Length: 302
Ligand SMILES: CCCCCCC[C@H](O)CC(=O)SCCNC(=O)CCNC(=O)[C@H](O)C(C)(C)COP(=O)([O-])OP(=O)([O-])OC[C@H]1O[C@@H](n2cnc3c(N)ncnc32)[C@H](O)[C@@H]1OP(=O)([O-])[O-]
Ligand SMILES: NC(=O)c1ccc[n+]([C@@H]2O[C@H](COP(=O)([O-])OP(=O)(O)OC[C@H]3O[C@@H](n4cnc5c(N)ncnc54)[C@H](O)[C@@H]3O)[C@@H](O)[C@H]2O)c1
Image (cartoon, rainbow, N blue to C red; front, side):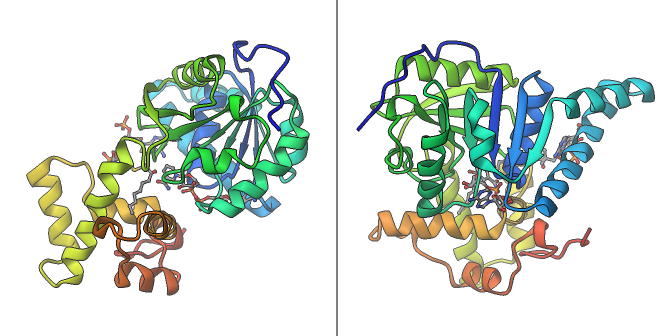
């Protein structure tokens, strides 16, 4: 049964709960707090949210160096001000009770996302809008776990969130115009350019990016070139800021595997989304990219 919101969701979004404090959740939290929203970030353990807090402060350190190049006092004040808009905790149900908007940025797995949203749906006030930052799962499949389809959409941010200027705003057929406008306004309020896309696999960017990245992996699997040479070629020959292997390590090979596995399940006969032995092997070995210290390339462990 769909319960429609009594109050209009055209009210500007002031309080935001972000579930998942990994690469994306912490980046979204940073830009939301920096634009004056009251933000609560949730993850599964205190250790994880502490790590997220440190990574947000580190990223803010890079922002202030550019914003206030020769003024260390202004740098400190800015960081303290942004951090004062942020709280981090481990109880998602509690966090959504006062949220105007909930953004989910947890692991790319439909069942886990559905289970989370189903419990949050019971706890959040009627006016609260839900959004998923999924890379590839149909928004309608995630939204089906709730009773607020009219207040559900996709907000697809890009990594690294503080730097990448785009947000894809996704609507399902049930998404109300008020919800869509509120999501679009939020994307702009956090300083991004928004584009609209229907709930189509991969939306705009990943529909093009995922086949490209998987083709790069397959090219290497066939022994036709090394990751290093593919990366050099795509940077110098096609003008990409990172080659596909550098980008894979940056995105996270576990997330990449979740994306491709889910896509293959939905489109089993499409060779663009067939699995990769090399990717599966690296993930099985715990080589998840920059975040684990090694992926296609080794990194300095922090
Ligand atoms: C199966 C396939 C899977 C597909 C996966 C899809 C995943 C997903 O759904 C979609 C995506 O996100 S797709 C992924 C989409 N993403 C891409 O495609 C990313 C492609 N890569 C890039 O755009 C660039 O390499 C970077 C911007 C990452 C780094 O730039 P660089 O020049 O190599 O190195 P630099 O000089 O160090 O940094 C430059 C400036 O950025 C600043 N800064 C950096 N990180 C920061 C942070 N965390 N905080 C704050 N600031 C940060 C830094 O301070 C500097 O500022 P300045 O003022 O200029 O001094
Ligand atoms: N990595 C990228 O480049 C990228 C870009 C855009 C979108 N996305 C999407 O964003 C989402 C998150 O990706 P990420 O790269 O930040 O992943 P990540 O692995 O860095 O972080 C995911 C976080 O979610 C937490 N988590 C898992 N289940 C949870 C639960 N039930 N409750 C609370 N926290 C939980 C994990 O502890 C982890 O900290 C995925 O849907 C992914 O597809 C990723």
